[in-house]
Image (tube, rainbow, N blue to C red):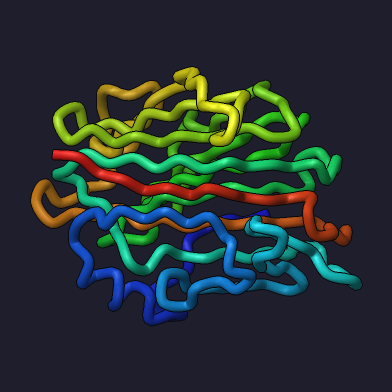
Amino acid sequence: MNIRPLPAVLTLAAALAGHCLAVTPILEEFESGKIDQVRWYQHRVAKGKLSQSDGLLNFRVLANPAPDNFASMELMTSQPGFDENWEFTLDISNTANQGTKSGIGFMIFNGQDRDDYLYVEYHGNSGISAGVFTNLSHAPAVKLSSKFGLPQSAIRVRFGKKIQLLTFFLSETLKEEGYIWQKVGTYSPTGAGGDVNAKWKMKAVGGTFGIQLFGFGVSKPVPAGKLTIDNFELTGDP
């Protein structure tokens, strides 16, 4: 699946998000049964669909799927900054048992240049895969994978303004059980200092990160309840 953030020309998201130059705390528990269209901008390809039901964000692939089926939703009401501390957490599950042929996860991108982005896909028992792109080119030797394979887990991403690193954590327990975080690696958007490095040329002042949630499936239907996200929380601190 060719995963990348929505081009700015496809949506008003870029213009609206540009007015939000600092992290605004967000707690999204997906309880309403309907996706908040002010908070999230949605996009879909072929038979992929994101929707809320049973207190979860579900990704489904509807009947008669295409070879590539995809849906994403971009956070419109907060773009955390390059010059501040912030983090987000989410509970995630994949019980589709389709290996790497279906997944759910997130993207983080350079708010001033959407051609710079990273993605993380959760494949449940088949583990986690990720990749980093700069100017739409896959950065050399930075495609990531993890054997951390569980039907459900939690993910935490933290950005530190002093060290200028995105640090990734995984927890085998979910929010209601209490997170127990295990650090799995770091990414540097400045080109140095992380386990994985790529130079995104972000602005020291005024640079922002965009966040999207997504799901995908290849060729086969995926029913509701198999690929889910819950308890998305974005916070910042001084």
